[in-house]
Length: 175
Image 1: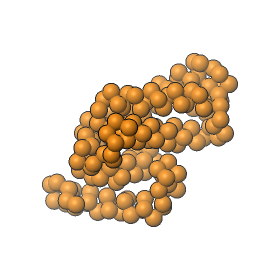
Image 2: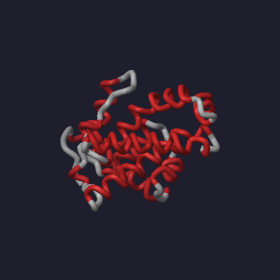
Image 3: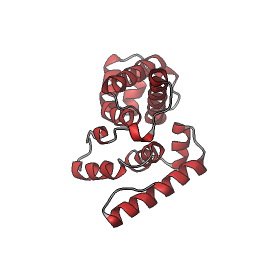
Image 4: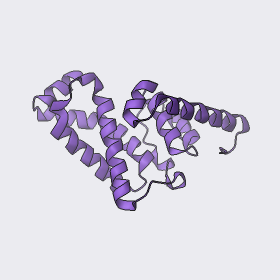
């Protein structure tokens, strides 16, 4: 991946295209956690790709590429949502079930994971996805979401408690 990034930074269009293809599913999943309208999601992803194309030469450390592109996407999603709806997305409006686009080898476990998350608040879901599925550290999530470490840890703790309760009761999430 680092080699592709370096080639794309030098203007290699094939390398850039390969990067876009490698990130497409992940970007869709993340956009889906913030925006429920398919057209708006595609707009956010396209704007992210355009920003990536314009700015990839400025990326200093290719190891930070994924974090960088996710940060751009989250900012694009938030901007589109604020522009279109002029308010923050309420937790009830999030259509998390449609978010599932399995890319791992263990599709069944991915489906179960996302099904468990569907009733959580937006912040809890995105943090759990970044932490468990994307395997970012709390410190990395802090810079992606522009949140305090203590806030991230609080969301992680609360989400884990809710998930544990849901699994024990076999029912719906509460609170």
